[in-house]
Length: 126
Image 1 (spheres, helix red, strand yellow):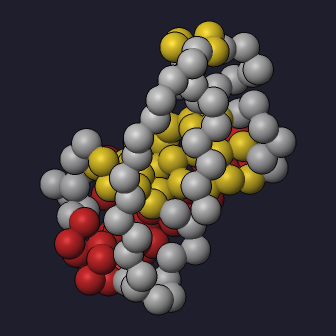
Image 2 (cartoon, helix red, strand yellow):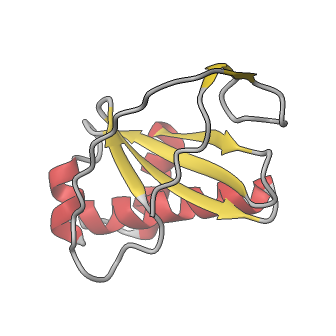
């Protein structure tokens, strides 16, 4: 499922409230759906040299923890290392970013450079 929402001419990263500069817009997006079976509990995006794992929760803390946990799980599996080793890599290389706080379910993304976790290795591990 994909729900792009509305167009904003200006809005901070993380949509904190209902306030944004709304604008008319035509949007064109493209997707490549990868059907790899089991192993993907939450969606991820490959973009701008990064891989971002998205997760939602009732609170920002819950969403950020889940996004980090999902990222660490995939790092460990794709690089064939322990959870503890992946957690160290996550502490060094994963950025936790707010996707949105305005909706009842808060959403965070945990992003890592593809130089650290390549899309190819991630897909092979699924």
